Each structure stands twice: as C-alpha cells, then as structure tokens.
Length: 210
Image (cartoon, rainbow, N blue to C red):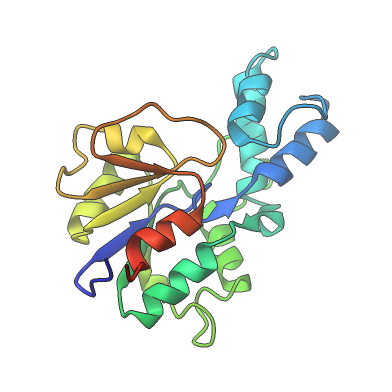
C-alpha cells in the first residue's frame, strides 16, 4: 500500500505516547484507585470519576502526566518503526494534537506543549539520525474542531487517532482514511473506521508489500 503521495496525520496523546503506567502509579500513590485497577487510561479515568470531585481529580492527574512528569511517559511499541518507515519511503507525516498550552488544575503552570516537544526531543523525533521529523511537522490545536481543520489544511489522506470522538465529529472529512488505535478496549463498530489494537497492524497496513 506504500504510496509517496499519501499524507498521514497522527494524533499524539495515547496514540504515540502512553501514560497508562504513569497514571496508574500516581493514582495509586494518591489513593484514588486500588492497585488492582488495570493499567488502562479509560479504566483509571472511570474509577477516579466515581470519587467525590472525581472529575476534578481526573483533571489534576492529567495535568501532572501531560505536564511536569511528561518525561516519564512511554513511547508506544511500534511507533518508532512507523516513523522510520515513513522516512524510508519518503511518505509525508504530521503530528496533529488537541492540546492546550496549560492545564486548568496545575499549580506549576507547566506549558503542556513545551513538555510534549521536550519529550519528543528526548526520543529523537527531531534528530537526523533518529526519526528525522522537524518541529514544523507538529501541530498543537486548542480544540478538537481546530484539530480537524488542521487535518484538512494539511490535506491528510489518512489519520490515526485513539479517540472515536475525533472521527464522529461532523466536520471530519469523509475523504480521509480513519484508523482508530484502540489497544485497551473494544470500540463500537463505526463505518469507514479501521480499528487496530497495536501499531504493528498500522505498519502492515501502510507498508505491507503483499
């Protein structure tokens, strides 16, 4: 399926980078969940939201992992291979993320976009000997609607995201191939959306020679 005319857009949070282990550890330390809760963002979120002021506590946890402790988050297995294959096949790729600059419940006022860029630098995203991306290929948008507008502006032929809601937005273009990365849950079947549970499937989808 390799085609140098393809333009692939990729979401960032929970698509390229995983916070599951970090969220689980911090939530257990704070007494918000029991250690038996699975290391899944969705499960952690659902448990915390059952607490008094649970929605606020959940936002506080997100502020920590997306901000001052971002460097402890993990690169998802298979992502490295994907970007290297894009580089080898001269396929254009962009990272397009719905990410505000600051979290509502963060006493440190850490810039979330700068934290994400620092994490990418530490994982050689912008190194010529690494993944070979430039910061100009990374877009942070303040709303989901503006994220979709960016996808249109970049003329993406394909988009990879972990949130079904992105593809269900009325403004999401029908012409874009939709790939849902859903490793921890069984998503509802959505027409025209290809659901996968690991990046190896995505790599095979784009770069299989068979």
